[in-house]
Every structure is written in structure tokens, then in C-alpha cells.
Amino acid sequence: MRLTLPLLLTLAACSSQPAENATTPGNAAVPGNDVAALPADTPAPAPAPEPSASPAPLNPPAPGQPGGLDDDRTPVSEAPFTEDSAQGAANVVQTYYALLGEGKYGQAYRLWEPGGAGMDARAFAASFGRYSEYHANIGAPGRIDAGAGQRYVTVPVQVYGRLKQGAREFNMRGSVTLHRTADIDGATADQRRWRIRSTDIKPRPEIAPSPRPTEDNRSTARYRCMDGSRLVARFDPDKDRVTVSRGGKVLATLRGQRVASGILYAAGGYELRGKGSDISFTAPGLPPIACTAIR
Image 1 (cartoon, rainbow, N blue to C red):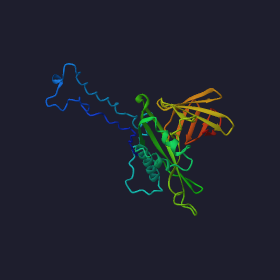
Image 2 (image 1 turned 135 degrees about the vertical axis):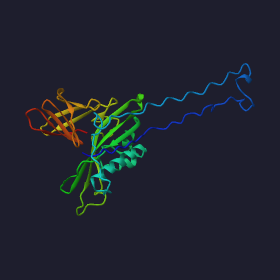
Image 3 (image 1 turned 60 degrees about the horizontal axis):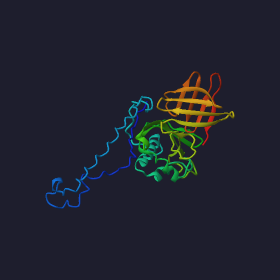
Image 4 (image 1 turned 135 degrees about the horizontal axis):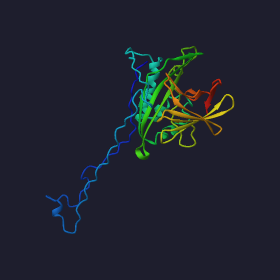
């Protein structure tokens, strides 16, 4: 087990309140001017508006609770880490959400691999326009997966905040998968840096997205499977479950399970396991089927 590394970020827009008594009647310069000194036909100045109440502080699910990060208590080494380590990859994720918190969407966008975000930089920035607050808790990275000169690592993330519409709260848990090329001949310095390859909480354009986050935290993902079938998965992070359908027929509703990285839902012999845009789906008595998200 590893210690969860928290990160709190805010995209809240700052609105300046009018100063008290900022608007003053035209005869305010007269010494001793007050309501009693005004002519009989002059209305008294309106009282200064009360400042609007701030929303209650957000209280996202704690580690170990549904929707929160894993309750990981093992201490993390304080030794310096290198950029190509798993901790270096987690640092990229922290930087990514810090840039989002500062509204530096262009710099955050450049931490994706080319084409990885699934939209151009303008649409990427616009996808955050629905939020008044946007926070993230970053978990400890998993182990580096190596193969064929490529390196991958997954970092768990809890994203929560408030929507502009109705100041409603949202909370989503997922993971960010990063990739880099190993130190092999011909690899450039940029290819050897960690870049975001995929995430299951990726921002989406406003028009025709799939999967598309909805304002009540639920999202729908559609998958094309190796056997030619298509699955629809409706995720409900508030209840930590997913409903899987095929051809308009509900196959099962699965409960979230603890897993080191990625996602895992299971119930009644059914299982949905995945990382990023790839999943495997298992029905009772049948082998797993590999599926890929339809963008």
C-alpha cells in the first residue's frame, strides 16, 4: 500500500463585491449630511446590498470511502525522484491539475500526447467552462509497466468541485495513464518524457461526446468489442456502480471493487475491468472479451 498524495485545486472565478456605501447621493459632500438633512421630497439612499452567501465548503469522500481514493497508509520515500520514475509521472499529473487550477489550459493541454485529449486546444479549454470550482486529489502512482521500449504508469485521481449551474457538487474517481519511450537509440528527449496517454475522466467537448459526463455525476461510455458486439456502460460514481447493456438489454449492474489501478466492477459472475479507453468484459462461464471505447 502507498500513501495517497492530496492535491487541492480551485478554478473558482473571483467576483468583486461592491464596497459598502460605494454609491453616494449627489449632496453627500455637504458636512453632516444624513437622512434627516435631505429635503422632504428626496428619497433616502437605498441600503447597501447584502453580500451573497458563499457556498458551503466542499466535503469530498475521504480515502477509503466510495468515490474517494484508496486508503493507502504506507509511507512514501522522501528520497529525490527522477523524472523518468513513477513519481516523476505522478508529478506530471500534479502539474497538469495545478495548471488547470490556474486557468492555464494551453500549458495543461501540452502535457497530453499529440491527439490524446481527443480535441483541439480551444475545445479543451472550453470543456472547463461548466465548472465554478474544480479540485483534484492525486494518489500514489502504480508500478511502471515496461515492454518493447515503451513505459506506462497509472496514477489514481479523485476530481470534485462545483458546477456553475445551480452550484451543484460533483465527484468523480478515475485514473490517468502516462506513457514515455524508454532510453533507446533514436528516442528524442521529448519522447522520453512522461506525457498523458489517456484518462477515464477526460474532459469532453460540448457537442456529441461519448462518453459524456452529465451534471449529476453519471456518465455513459460505449464500447466496440473484439467479437463484434457493442456494450453500453452507464457509470454512477456516487453509488460506485455501473450498469452494462447490450442491444438495449441490461445485462447486469456491477459494484465497484478495490483495485491497484484502473477500474474493476463485478457482481453475479459478471466483471468489467479496464484502464483508460480499454476494458475487458466477462459474462458468467465465458472468457473475457476485449473492448475499446468508441470516441
